[in-house]
Every structure is written in C-alpha cells, then in structure tokens.
Image 1 (cartoon, helix red, strand yellow):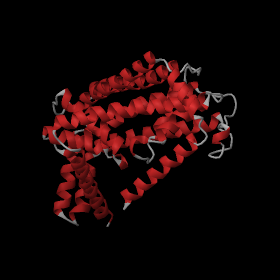
Image 2 (cartoon, rainbow, N blue to C red):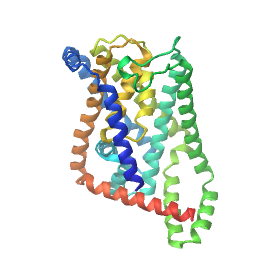
Image 3 (tube, rainbow, N blue to C red):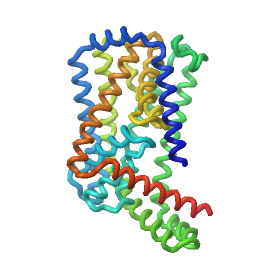
Image 4 (spheres, one colour):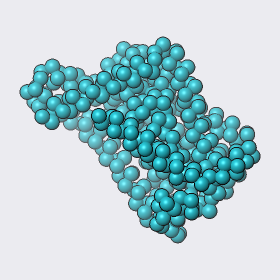
Length: 361
C-alpha cells in the first residue's frame, strides 16, 4: 500500500510540475531555439555525460575493491542497470537493484552490496555538499526574485536571497546528519547488534539471526569509512564527478548562447538535487525539468523562459537516452531481466517492512 501511494504521489507531482512549466510555452520558439543550438557544444555535453558514468564507477571501485575485488566492468554493469531502473521504474528502486545485480554477478551477500551502494551515496553527498557550499558562498541575489508571469499561479510571492540560502543550508545540514548517522552506526556496531538481538530474539530467533547477518554484512561493506586513504580517493573522484555535471551545464549554455552568471551551474545542481530527491514519476519527468528551469530563473530572473525550457528538455534527454541504451546493453551482458530484478527488490523491501513491523511490536 505504501509503495502504491508513493507511485501515485510521484505521478501527480510530475504531472503538476510539467503542467506549470510548459502550459504557456511557445513551442514554435522552443523549436527554433533547438534548431539554432550549436551542435559541437551539444556533442561535447553528451560525451561528458557518458564519461560521468565511468567516473562514477571509478569512485565506487574505491569502496568495493578494498573489501571484495570486483572487475571494473562488473561494477559498471551493476551501476548502469541500477540507473536504468531509476529511470524506467517507479519508487526509485535503482539502488536496491544495483546491489542485487552485483550480488548475482559476484555471489556477494546482499547486505554487503547494499552497504557498498549506501557508502557510495555518502561519498556522492560529499560532492553535493561542496556544490551547496559554493552556492551558499557565491549566490547572493541583491533583490527578491519573482517567478515569470506564466508561473505566478504556482507561487506569486517574492523569493528572497535569505529564503534561498536558508533552504540550501537546511539541505546541507541534513546531508551532514546522514553522514554522521552512518559513522555512528559503524562505531556502535556491537551495541546495535545486542539491542537488535534482545528485541527481535523475543519475537523470532530466525528473524534475529537474519537481521544480525544482514547488519554484519552491511557494516563490513562500510569499510571505506574506516580507511582514510580510500575515503579520500572516493571523495576526490566524487568532486571530479560533480565537476563534470557542472561542465555539462556550461556546454548547454554555450550551445544555446545563453548569458548567465558563472555560478549558475551550482545553483541549478543544488536545486536539481532537491527536486529529483522527492517522489516523482519514472525518468524524473517533471522534477528534472523544474530543477533546471527554476535554477535558471534564480540565477537570471530575466532569462528567456522558452530558452530555459529548451535547455531542460535537452538536458533531460541527454541523461535519459544514454542511461536507457547503455543499461539495456548491460542487462544483455549480465543475461538478466529488469522485471526479475524488480520482483527481487520488492521482495527485499517486503522483508525489511516485516522486520520493522516486528521490531515495533
């Protein structure tokens, strides 16, 4: 039931965002802007997007290989299959599916592969934290920003610099809290196991043993948090990865001859990361476009809305198409079906829900 509600809510959010963003669009002008785009810059943007796939796996290798040596291409296929799932399946099942793919291909316990994924997300947050920090430092609008007339029905009030910095600061604080919680989890491993055994053991010894094994594998997979050198390498590659995301934005501005402040990529990445983290439809349709258009409006309130919409459309396609094409190839390489992985991930979620319910009772 919870998953169905999440799917419906995501679809509604996506439809509403698309409606407000594109309801007054001059499609003839959008088409003209797309036709006038400089092909060389668009090709460069696409190549950088594809290179980011390899950089992401490079980062993950510093997390996985110190615990269990895995060939680069196995990490690559697991990552791309997970991304494919995030783009085509509801409820953001891609991270679980990435762990399941690595478990199947290398016979690694699921708890451990799930920890690899979780720690990878943490190192990703380190890069995002730097993006937020830059945004907080350099983005200081001298006057209130208002949405364009055709978006005033969504929000008509002023958007002050204080509001924007406050929102970014809140998200940054949340990121720090998540990282601290994972470090605490690792540091208090034995205490947490004792509490888990005491609570779940009264309900079912089998459930208690299952939870213990899952937690032990999970904390073993968090090894990189105790290795300063591996963590530093993963963090450095994470910064490089977020740098490629910013470069893609710069290429898009060059392709469409858009005049925006130099810090615009950081504003867009900050807003985009917030929008795509909320429940949404498959493919991030709606939240992805809102993040780009909203970021452009904040950075330059006088921006041509149809140009902003054109950039959002191209940006989404440049992320969606490579993920789908390469993900399908990786599925063929691993000789598995996405539907099968989806069923397994749902079974894992049902097991976790049952464990949580038992613990609460």
